[in-house]
Structure formats: C-alpha cells, structure tokens
Length: 366
Image (cartoon, rainbow, N blue to C red; front, side, top):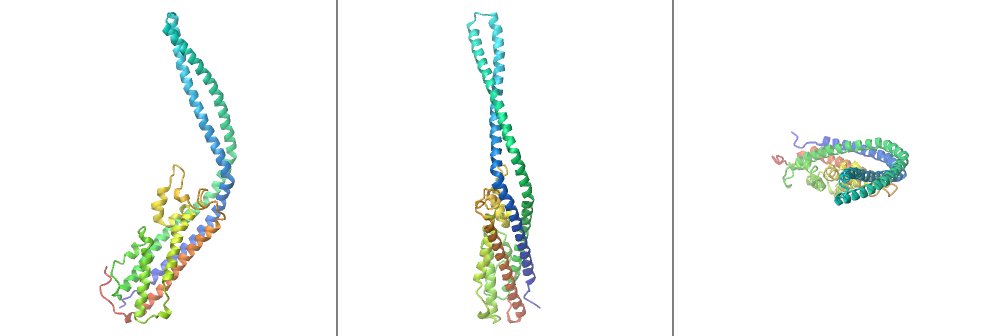
C-alpha cells in the first residue's frame, strides 16, 4: 500500500490557474493601454478648458444666487416697510401733531427709499449675472459635449478592464487555496518520514495565504522549509546528491520578491482596481479611502492611469510602468510554475523510492 501520495495534480491545477491568470494580466495590460490613450486625450486636451468653463458656470451661478437672495431680502423689507408707512400715514392723518408718529413716518419713508434703490440696483446686477451665466453655459456646451463623448468612448474600455481585474483577483484567491492545499499534501508526505521535523497543523499551509500581514512572509517560509526538508530526506537516502541539488534560496527569493512586486507594489503604481489584485489591501485600504460624495478615488487614484491626479500620471511614457507591470507578473507566475514543476519531480522521486524510507505512524494527524 502506497504511503506517499503523488500530489502532482494539485500542482498542475495551480500551474494552469497561473497561466490563465497571466493571460488575463496580459489582456488587462492591453485594455489599460487602450484606455490610457483615451484618458490622456481627455485629461490633456479637454479637461483644462472643460474645467475652466465648468468653474465659470458654478461661480457665476453662485454669485447670481447671492444677488437674487439679497434682492428677495430687500423686496421683503420694502414690502414690510411700505405696509408700515401706509399704516403710520393713516394714523398721522388722524393725529398730525404726534411727534412719535412723525419720526416713525420719516424713518420708514427713508428706509423705503433706500430699499427701493437697492432693489433697482440688484435688478440690474441680477440681469448682468444672468447674462454672465448664459455666456458661461454657452462656452461650456461644446466642451461638455466633447467631454461626454470622450468619457463615453473611454468608459467601455475601462469597464472591460475592471471586469478582467475582478476575475483575475477571484482566480488569484482560488489559486492561492489550491497552491496552499498542494503544499499541505506535500507537507503531510514529508512528516511521515521526517521525524526530525517539528510537528504542526498542516492546514497552516492554506491559512497562511489568507491572513493579512501574515501572508507577506509565512507562505514563503513554509514553502522554503518544504523544499529544504524534502531535499534533505532525498539526500539522506542517496536518491539525490549535492551534485544535482542546487541551492534553492535564490529561487525562493526571486519568486517571493516578484510576488511582492507584482501584487503589492505595482497596483499602487498602476492605480484603480488593480489594487484588487491584493484582496486584503483593497478591503483594508482601498475601499475605506474612497469618498464617493467628493468624487474621490483616494488610494485607487494614486497611481498612473486613472484621472490626472495620480502620482505618475504626468511622467510619460506610461509604457514604462506597463512594462514593469507585465515583467513582474511574468516573473512571479512563470517562476512559480517552474518551482511547482520542480517540486513535483521531487514528489515523484519520493513516491518511486518510498521503500527506502521508514515511515513514522500517526504523525500526520495534526
């Protein structure tokens, strides 16, 4: 009865998912490049003038509103004061020698004259501001049409890019679980013969990928230990020798460094929903930083490609950032496939030579 399990299938599933993810990353890069051309045209050629006229309309309407509110206030005062003048006038007609009524009548008629002059002045100003608003709206209209046309042209491309990124993010989570499960099965294999290896809960190989912060270093350490202990076990039984066993630390460092670069660093340089490629970063930082009311993407708009507020938007050409984005993912996913393929070979060696090992019973219960 076989005591080692050949876990190559889960490794192959992880590699297939990596290839699918890499294809989606390439598709997202093409879509992002197309969107970038349209967005640069929008931000450089349309937005400055569109923003100018939009601000002009807003400021003119705000000024017009203030003048109209002032005129309404004076109109109310005029009407109230006129009613008071009429009332006092009637009383004064009945008692023409009443000094108090005379003073009141004089004061009210003076205020009434001032209010009337202010209303006349404000009517003129309101008329002028209405003309200014009309002029600003006339200036805005052609640029608003250009702006809407450019946004409508870019939106489908951006929408397609966002869908690809979301699908890629979901597949990344599935791949992490599959990869962690593959590591767990191989760890169980190794614990059956590696009495020197500290026993532990092998489910950590899956969980380590899903816990924020912890997933920045623990999966790398677990995989590194798995490779080291597997090679040690194979060397101990003379199945492999130093001559055909290369140091794996450089491979692990390249793999993990490229993963951090592709999933953690480049999304901040790209911006937008690429931050979803690191799900926890998106949940913990990205969503919390979005201010819909203020039309602000927060951290999502920090990168290169979205709007014109990104840190690197005006550093052209953007193709340099795109090249780094692609290189990071190609190295990360490609090298991970290579490492899975290499370890599957070690797993097969263990299965083919299991008669050379002494198995320790009940060590894989935890």
